[in-house]
Amino acid sequence: MVQRSYVQNTELGPGRQSGQAFMIMILLVIFSMLVLISIASAAALREARISELDYKSTRSFFLSESGIEDAVYRANTGKFLAPSYSLSLYGASTAINVINVPGGKEITSYSNFGNAHRTIKATLAQGSGVGFAYAVQVGEGGIELENSSKIIGSVYSNGNISGKNTAEITLDAFAASSSSVTGTNSFLISGNARGHSISGLTVGKSATSTTSISNSTIGQNAYANNITSSTITRDAYYSTSISGSSVGGSSFPGTPAPADLPKINLPISDAQISDWEAQALSGGVHSSPCPYVLSGGTTNLGPIKINCDFTITGDAIVVMHGTIWVAGNFNMSNTSQLKLDSSYGSLSDALIVDNPSNRLTSSKIIISNSAKVLGSGTAGSYIALISQNNSAESGGGEIAILPKNTVDASIYYAPHGKMEINNSTSLKEASAYEIEIKNSATVTYESGLASVMISGPTGGYDITGWLEVP
Image (cartoon, rainbow, N blue to C red; front, side, top):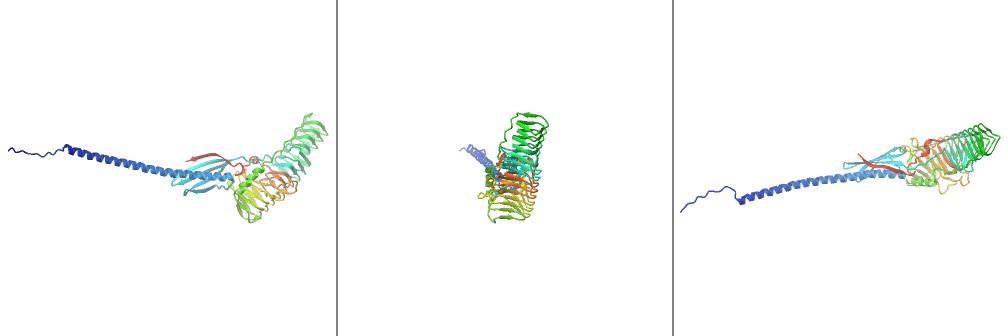
């Protein structure tokens, strides 16, 4: 028998080698999957964080936008707009800052929602304003000056202009249509005078009439159909005749007489006043106590409608934060003050006195003693005191606006009523259906009145810029 010897083979067989390779492959696959899962998880977490940040940033953006929209709405509806305030939304708040700039406002809204900061900035330009081209503008009722009263500026009247006892208009005086310009006892018009007829004047520059110039002293040229008993420093232009007059320059007979001036509307329409009343009403109504009397301390008012007579007396100070509509009579006396809040800047506002149920004997304004009506403290800021009393236009004798003694005010306006300006009163601008100025009272025109920007209702604001800033 042949004996065989067996030696153990320690080398891997084909089956065992393929098993190890499979295991390694499985491990590689598992590792790769873990890597992919890790990468996917990191990406998902990053996307979640980005999504959360985007959510917070978007919320913060809309919160900031809401602040701008709120401020613009307040500006355009005449509501009180503070220099700085906050608005809450989405459980967070945005800080709103308002700066008055020439001709408008600059508004910034800064929000922070979950450390996502967004800032929006808008710029607003004031809409069309109200232009007072003359120191005094008058309707068909005309204007009378007497006893050293003075208008420092120009006058345009749809009715007669008359003056006496050293009254003076320092610039031009224009009477429209068939209205005349007449004077007695040294009525001086330092600029140009023009009317359907002119008599009894001292005119610093030229005088122009559709019909006649008589008993006048003219500093420059005279233009009329006929001229009588006048002294003309330079040239005389006339169509028909000249008699009893001296001419320092040349005469030009046969020159056609100029046409009458057209009547023009007063600068604020009834429709505009109605719009302002609506803005005042939007702020609420005061109905009690009535009459409403303030005799001391400081009171913030506006926008508001006061549904009865309103009196400010003693040393009371009323600070306007919006348009005020008084549906009764308005009185100021003693050392009381009515003024605009400083946030108005160069903008202006109105106090309207209008009782629609009684415009014949109500809707009147009386300002007396040392009462003051002031703007915001910035140049170009005024309060317009407006009366809708229509007694004068209806042929009655009621006075719509009566400023007297040493009162100081910005703008007085009575488109259908009579204004009587007395004693040492000093005004910036006066417009009414009929005006009487006497006893050393003065109207002093300021150039800023040519374009008064009344806050809120006057055409509102135009948005000129709206963007996100760093």
